[in-house]
Length: 308
Image (cartoon, rainbow, N blue to C red):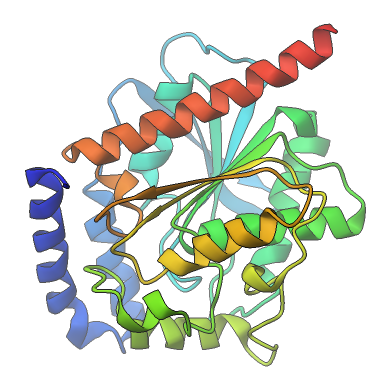
């Protein structure tokens, strides 16, 4: 059974969704309003943000104000927003939380958004951000952890697929939080889940914007259709109350047929990217803790390999 605070959060989110319904068709206003709402999920106090440029994109680098626990490892965070909204500002809260809890530098960049910039623009930007870390910051791929939420989770997996297909070195690991893996929005959960946050018709519109003239089942757009062989280890979190619940189930089933290690955690009654509510919802705090434990374990395994 979910906590009282998570139920309260779901009630609030549903109320907020009702408020947003009239502006879903007004993309410029929706973008502004979402920035305001998510910006209220402020980062912890003991972190600092530096405005930087990554491969020509505006970006931030966040780190704890105290000494780094990990000086070699970094996180590349890819924000969500249906490929059509949100930014480094909207996701500062979760970026800052990861920086503090992991004791790592966390980079987050503003990739180009649809419909002005359909696929492959966002994927190209993700590749450029990754290359920036490797080539300009001299960070070894095995010291990079990729974390993405929602559309950012789908984009993170798309990035891994493209790096593999290009023959480029993969990062240490990836964490996908409520990833958008199937933009057809045709799964059972997409059609029937009582998601407090995501409206089905809006998701379909955003999906069309992002796909543009491309086939929406293109594996780089909808990674549930991809061959998941030869990827780095991954952790996936999803809640049972999500439209996107079945996306993660299918990714797990597909990965289990390959040599890729995908760890799936399914959280009962949790809503879309509940991790962002870490200040108030116990399940959010626990989910963030689980992610950090997973990342630390992956780093420890890599360090052990180096010592052998």
